Length: 403
Image (cartoon, rainbow, N blue to C red; front, side, top):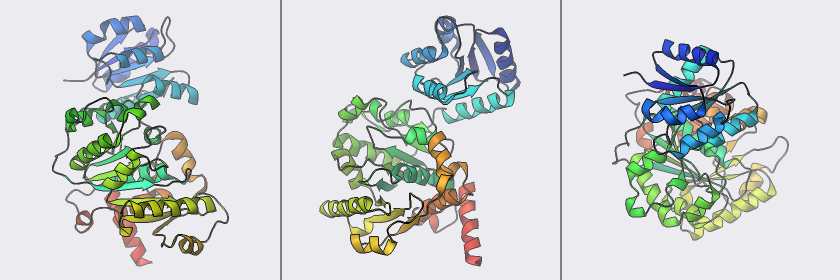
């Protein structure tokens, strides 16, 4: 049976245009002329997705979206905001209200059809993965802020999702100010905050699946709480429990960690198979890396568990690699070169280079690094189903061999 799309707009011409575009793509369409009508009838319509215009009398689309999010029957309904306003602050308002996507008018019918199709696919209920898996778990960490922890964690996770058919998950443990949802350009609909008040004995795989966000790459994400108060409710025991559930549901699990050694951070570090310690080529960052290595030693983390990643976060001269290695008494494992403005759009619009431009210099580097840190059992034999990411990695490897 075709999905029903609920279009809410006070302008009859706009209703007819949107309805025609959607029916042309095979969807059933129901309409409402204002927010009050939509709220009254949505339980009867039972749509698969709603498209809300912003500029309506009495109640605008943002408020309608917020109210739909508070109702149990529409809390998880996919919602697109449709408006003539296209400024960044309007986009942020849409996402803060709980919308899943934003389209500026006048819209292209093909674009509307494509966005609806992608959103329905991305937010469709997913069966929990087989629970006999054992995830390869990587924690990305630094005591120094601004060195690219979230960028590296997000792109590694996306890279893994694009290379392998095996399920991958990004867990954002920066509970106060995590950015994983923004960096993936997915609305912060659910996250850790939804788990905070659930007793551990009631927190199972099915509950966890309901709060995971979905990205177009196939990656699932456990985002930070929407409210900082919820972060205070989470403790190390809950984090341990959730992580162990995730490790049984995914082949790859990436932690995006805050710049501290809080109880929840240590819980994640304990569960990790690999710790990627980031530093930049400047004195404060090197000192923080040295302190982190001392703490890892006190936490009994084996030296081989820790991989040092030197991220050249600025243009110009920095500390030499040899000087850094001498200071921290450890070899640097990976160096990320400075890429200038290549990450600006990624950070501004939530388009990770590994996803948006996997053939570009920085996107390819992240994808190759994800492959490098993949399971040995996966790298040792070609997969039966070769995803595009896997093909790109192999093509680049063959090209390097010819050089």
